[in-house]
Length: 71
Image 1: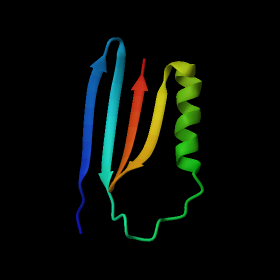
Image 2: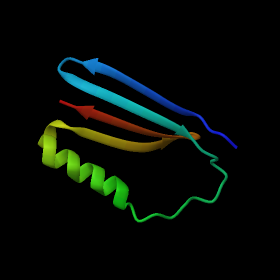
Image 3: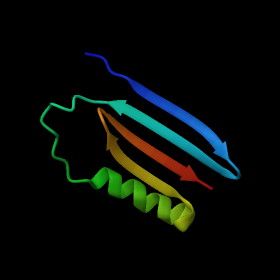
Image 4: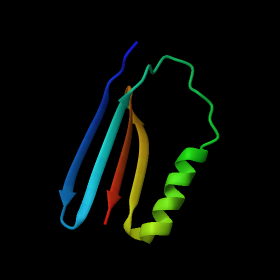
């Protein structure tokens, strides 16, 4: 039924900040995943950037938001 994905990229000093927001039906039954995809992203960022990269994924209202901050 379509969707709404928002992508924003900006610069904060020497860092690149990327934000992705995806609307979802908060009343729908949540999908049960294993978390492998999110774990892989965190591990890959750590390998390439160490503690200098930030990865944040959260639910806010009816949106799933991901923020990446890369040096």
